[in-house]
Length: 348
Ligand SMILES: [Zn+2]
Image 1 (cartoon, rainbow, N blue to C red):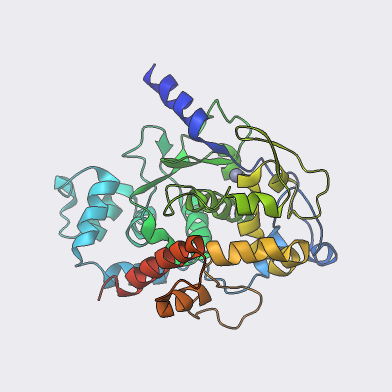
Image 2: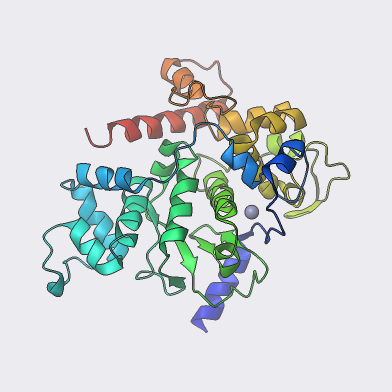
């Protein structure tokens, strides 16, 4: 019964996400020809492989990070939130968090899960969620790749965000055809996700992150994924509640999936912004600019330059002591600035 209630709650709160991608692999030559193709999803393997400013998974860098913060008190907090334990296992003979985490979750999996929690506030542990399985190395790799594709300061607004590999062999009966779903209190990745091409796993991770970052809970006031401004940019027509009329023309959209409702339009637009910015710009410069300002704080991925530059909105917010910006954008800029400064001063 409890499970039923939980599933019902999910049904009310959840945003169903990317369906299984069908037959997405194609040769690079073909993909070149299809550079401007409009299809079911906003990005394909080729687009990710040729995207700018990528920071793919590197196990040594993860260990380097964990070693650099191993004496910080926040490591113990990560340990507690991942294991629901205060002490290290008696049979482990461990004196530090990294050792104990390896003992509990595995030599490779443990450090990856600790990294995702400590640096990005994402909790992938099956020990604290009854609907999770332990993620394997391949799955954790795509979690990390997806996370690395977004501005790191955005993750500081999360608090121990549940981000799980849903129980293997089971489906969430409310979303039997989905690869993954994003809820207010958890993000779930299903068997369908696990069967995707590795690069599609990564694209789905970014899509789901776009949902939970776009949601109301994240921003001061309201979410950025269904504002009047966003809805009007694509000419969305509300039928009632959160039911929308599917637009007749796909001209302003980056994929078929984006045309389901404004929130999917938003998540797909974040994916296109990250991996296919020129294509997205050609679809709608106004929507491109909206995602640029509100989500990426002005950081762009059009070329290899300025990958490490401070996002322009953050620079603007630093200088602002007046009301030149409209109040909503000012609030968002301010939140970006706070998170950005926290991120860069985190372990000073
Ligand atoms: Zn979605």
